[in-house]
Image (cartoon, rainbow, N blue to C red; front, side, top):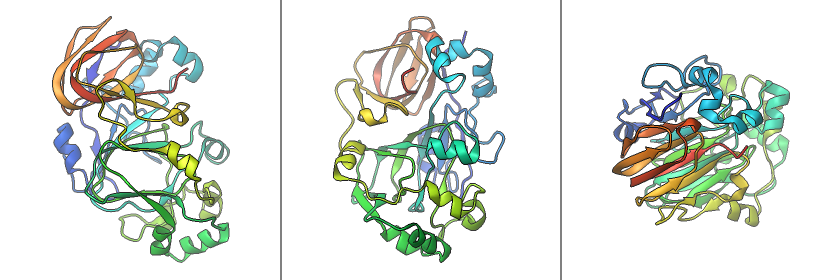
Amino acid sequence: MPIPQKLPANQFDHFYRGGNRIGALRGGPGGPMRPEEWIGSVTSRFGEKEQGLSRLASGELLIDAIATDPVGWLGEEHVASFGNSTEILCKLLDPDQDLPVHYHPNKAFAQEHLGLSHGKTEAWIILAAPQGATVGLGFKRLMAFDEVRSMVKNHDAQGLIDSLNNYSVRAGDTVLVPAGVPHSIGKDIFVLELQEPTDLSILLEWEKFAVDGEVNGHLGLGFDVALQALSLEPLSDDLINRLIIKGAFPSEKLVSVFRAVADEFFRCDFIPSQLTPLQRGFSVLLVLDGAGELTFGNAIPMSANRGDAILIPHSAGDWQASGIQGLLARPPKS
């Protein structure tokens, strides 16, 4: 029977700088070019076979363990709805530079052009941010396809950066980023990201980064096709109010850090430090603070400390957390 367990660090090299705060929190190697950790991942990097996949403490790949006992890990209802897919990918992002303007295709585009069953809607849970930090989300005005294509072709990085709306963020805020919406994350914003389980990014600019966007920026589709997945319309004020939550956590009680618009993709709750009962189900717990204990209906108790990433299978039963604050990521309801 699968058991709850702490995950080893899973940082790896990327094309942008960062990673030291991840290393400090999770006991990983840190930076300078390892700005991401993929946690509880059954998703590999685009074009790679194993990089990005999480290993258990035993060294076994999580994806292989789930294939051996999908019901034990995920539950009967989940498997009936989604098969062996966990339906989520959790990441820590720790950029030491502003991220490039980019976007991700939706499910329909990914199915048609890449033969995949998921797109990439994502959300950012802001763990730390410098004073005055901002994120870019959506175009300021309606853009024409040819206008954006020309900016990409001419490497007009500053024009693309300036084309986005910027929103201030601080620790405790959350931002849902629908597939297709152009976006960027500012320097030194430390993020727990939840997303659909793919690695599908399309770059609009890459001037300051160790990547050749002309070759690797369009998922092998070419920009004429890849840009068809881009949302050219600005986001309405009503939608922004549903996508961005100011002060979503911490809280003195168990609360969702997203609004209902995220539920079809993933769920995430903030766990307060007092004794908190939780329902069974596959989940990934990142402990943000404290030193406490997790007790399970069908598994032995385990300690939980700041920086632990704990994988909790469905078979562990209903459970309780005490003495810690953390973020609990779950797949959508089946």
